[in-house]
Length: 527
Image 1 (cartoon, rainbow, N blue to C red):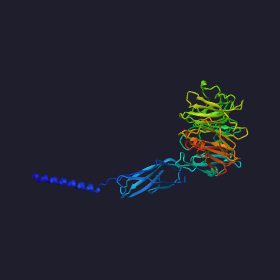
Image 2: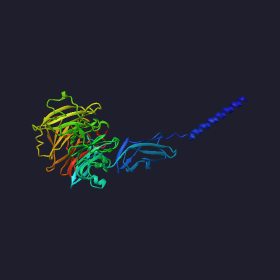
Image 3: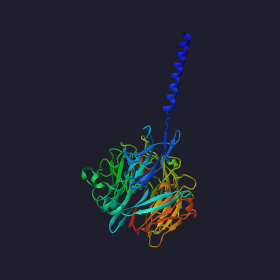
């Protein structure tokens, strides 16, 4: 009896085990997980452009006998239900993800993957912004620069002209009496806005860096609407906390921003900037990156000296300082920064110091009033500290023969290239000086005599030069007669191993007054 019972139990156990195995064999289906990946972590596109994305689907088991559906989600909305995305960009946004959901219709399980998108307007990309005067009116134009990889060191550059972009996007005239343009930034990391300085029409206006739509008018952001007497701005510096606007008489008017996260906050006051009991002459601000220094350098023409205007913090923004210089570092013939003596400054530009952020070089062309001789004048400044004046140290002053370039009658425009060094062929340690239709070049490192770099057609007069593009490897040249050119300034071009002329526009932009390269997101300018 006992043996029969044991045998019965064994049969029952084996039977139960068989049922469990059968159930597992017929109903258990390992998950065919799907991984969604893209070839890149992000992509860029402009408004109106068709985006095509083909993600890669990797299956845990295999891709045979699957029943899938798809949905592409962007900013909470469905933009496609196809395997590959083909979508016309209809939104401007910075680095937001587009997600692809792959749904296994048999199990209802969804698998997702994403790619970040930088979607801008057609006018948000790097470009040269050109301010000109045509038929008595201010005209702002946009020359888009595109770079294609052709296997060469720098790629192939192509250009597209968008004349009179302000009228195109705002459907109104910009104004008249144009002066200059200035890109400036906000702490949020967005594209830089553009101030347009002009003295006619609606006056100075700030434009969106995204699409050049009008933001604010300078005249509307003076406290209580009180504009300075005979207000005709000629220059502007817009830093993190401080904005300075320079009137035609050299007086400087300032505003301290309420927040660094906005392009425009706070109000200008109609009282000029004061230092040591007298009004500061700001007619020669040196436009240069301020983020690593905490100040902007200015040449005080009235007192023939260099000064610094602070932007280190909200508390000290707007304070003016003399430079602290170790007297023992001066060579006997080096013109003192706080008193240049018989020297007058014709031009000062900046260059980057390779040793790193926190130092910056300033390079001037001087003329001795007593002898008429010309000199280069090179000094560097250090980042500002809370407890001390900004410091500077002399580098080199040397005589230079500019008799072939400056003769008292020809039109001269100066430009110091920033010399951003990535490799042996990328440094651009050059000073450019125009003489009517000729562009002359001086190599700061080699210290060879100044030489003619390029000659434009007779009758054209150079009125604007800009070299702010990344690495200063290309320079834009604007003409009084409306022509616009781009020249190659790489070492290979300088040494005659490459064609110098990259682009000659066929459009007449009007009398070009000023050019500024649109760097977009800072290029060491933002903070």
